Image 1 (cartoon, rainbow, N blue to C red):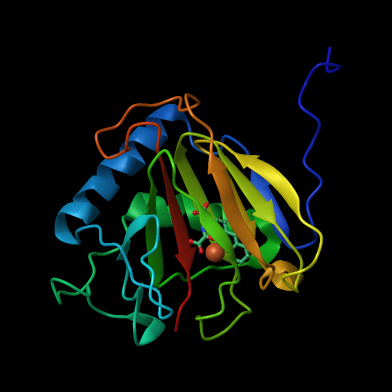
Image 2: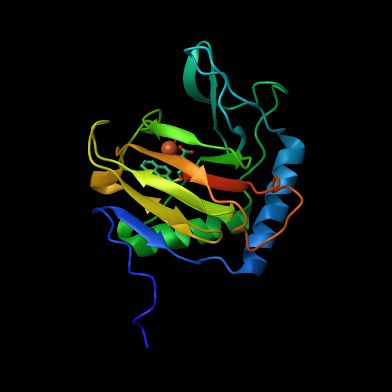
Length: 215
Ligand code: MD3
Ligand code: FE
């Protein structure tokens, strides 16, 4: 009987959500590889050009990483504090992401940047667009780990209608085509919902990876 299942998510054109794409074992293995990334490239809290610090901490892997400071938002080839090159994107993370991107109909994805966003229990991400990348023909793909997050999808203008989608650990989300420049954000992390425990997950927190083509 399907009567009591969750209703399907109706998503805008260009958005593909692969629920439970990573098994709990695959999630654990992916976080093990991200633990090594964090050991090489420590988490930092970026300052926004307007002054305040971001709520979440982050780091990157890949040829380029996203950073922010008083000079602005940008991608750069080195960590802002250690000044070292970013570690490589772990091959298993890259492969499962590129498989989902292909299945979503966006062809061969060649990411050169992977942002690692670490949300504490009170983490959030205000409504924004990702437009620091050179060519918007490339989609962005995200992998979620830990507690559920209420993810908000808006329109192409900030004031547009929004819809909320609950992202769960193991979900893979692909954003491209006509949705690539939609506003989006994370309204809240839902306590007590993580199916997995891992040393790099903050208590009642969440980790999100976004793979991008920056240059
Ligand atoms: C829609 N991260 O890092 S992932 C970000 O859950 C970011 O941490 C959120 O937004 C998170 O910039 C959302 C899903 C996502 C990522 C990139 C997008 C959605 C997107 C780019 C364009 C439109
Ligand atoms: Fe974003």
